[in-house]
Amino acid sequence: MIDKKIMARVNKWLDGNYDENFKDEIRELLKNNTDKLVDSFYKDLEFGTGGMRGIMGAGTNRMNIYTIGMATQGLCNYLKMKFPKQQIKLAIAYDCRHNNTLFAKTTADVCSANGIKVYLFDGMRPTPELSFALRYLNCQSGIVITASHNPKEYNGYKVYWDDGAQLVTPHDKNVIDEVQKINDISDVKFDGNDELIEIIGDEIDIEFLKEVKKQLLSDELENKDEIKIVFTPLHGTGAVMVPRALKENGYKNTFVVEEQMIADGDFPTAKSPNPEEPAALEMAITKAKKLDADIVMATDPDADRIGIAVKDQNNEYLLLNGNQTGAIIMEYILSKWKEKNLLKGNEFTVKTIVTSELIKDISDYFKILQFDTLTGFKWIADAIRKNENSKIFIVGLEESFGYMIGDFVRDKDSVTAALIIAEIAANAEKEGKTLFDKLIDVYLKYGFYFESLFSIYKHGKSGAEEITKMMIKFRNYPPTEIAGSKVVAIKDYLKLKEFDLKTNSEKTMDIPKSNVLQFFTKDGSKISVRPSGTEPKIKFYFSVNSKLERREDYDLLCSELHAKIEKIKTSLGLE
Image (cartoon, rainbow, N blue to C red; front, side, top):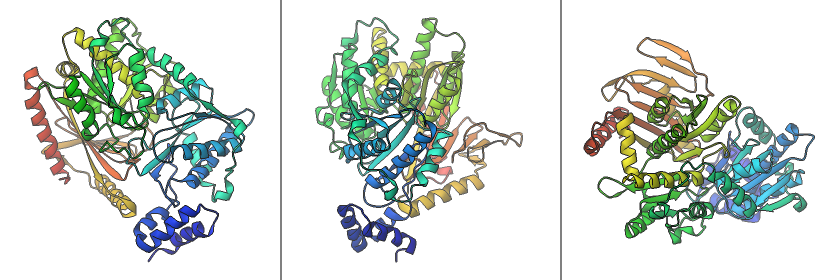
């Protein structure tokens, strides 16, 4: 039996002015899959602080032209309130997913129908290019149609403000309020004004790549041709910009996985469109083995994240985790700034709270101020915004394969990261080293941190409720000991309290609220727990560390620390 409130939502779609294909989909679900129907209608697809993301299809809890139209109308209403006396401008980009052009055009139509000037890309483009274009064109807002690395059933809608960053306080909450006031599709202006929609393309690409090039730190590298790179965009927008950026900057030995250069929202040749997953790089690594390549690079569908695989000490290709790639990038950039006498004492770096403390150790070594933010690059961009008048931002990163080098883009940027990684490899080659050697150098100098991510998926309405119960249990009944080591501190980002269990004291944290818990143990382990903001899962981030004395001890220490994380998982009941 379907709940009456849910059935009323269903009937509103069946009886209303909605697309007939959606009505047929609903009737089919009524006959054969009421659980899926309930999931499609039991709530409105949440317009969160960064936008929306969800499964495509009919229903109030799905990505479709109606939920996108209502969200866009709410955004337009807020923009007109904030900028009442000027021509509002907005840029739109999209990735390779199904309905990408439909959703982008729907968004453009609603904006233009509201009198807003729209710059719409002529084809798919990376998310970081949208961030750049927004500021370059002096827009007040921007939108990317993307579900990032989610499975093929998903699409999404990310909103940006005039500084090129995703929405933060107060704009995020204010936009949400305006979106929630849109109660019906009759409140949405769907009939676009083509005179206010301008198609943009290569002229923005050229300017974007000029800014990317400015972030490079080695002026003369004569051995660029000796660095052999295999790249895959996993059927996404990385195909448009990454190979072009590499080749224009002298990395002529760049090879692509041709089958995955084809834009396709089904991601037919990739087990996952997520470069965090080793399976996503299988085809690229197979090609790299044939070519004896130095680096494998893979970007996610909207090309804001990048995964890097390198040859390890056994000459096997190893996918570095985000902390490892981030540590290599951070150490290289800060070393170069120091070498060029660019460090004046007012620089800063940023990482997220679930990212390795190795990043902070590197910043501390160079006497660079390090800010910690909540998960997500909107918060890294917020740290830049708050400090840009008095301090100089160098680099920001998070463990989930996101890197921001320089502040011309205010989001994750795989294009610039790809060039910096290639530059680091070329510098290493001059020293007779590989990228893996550079990673070991970092561990020997700053300490060996070993991290792991464990996720539990819980789908649908009941799954969301299960995740909520898990967080309540960890919050109300926190562990006192984990894998034999005492818990000495707890950070609760929902209560904004940091508890020091050694002194039995607490203090308030100066950071926005978020449903995150962190446990710190006496032996230096850090365990972070948070529900994903974009997928139906709860994430556990584990970080343990030790001292690496010799290169030859790397494999052994990896095994020991891996075993330690397994004990932590068992201790927390996560087997």
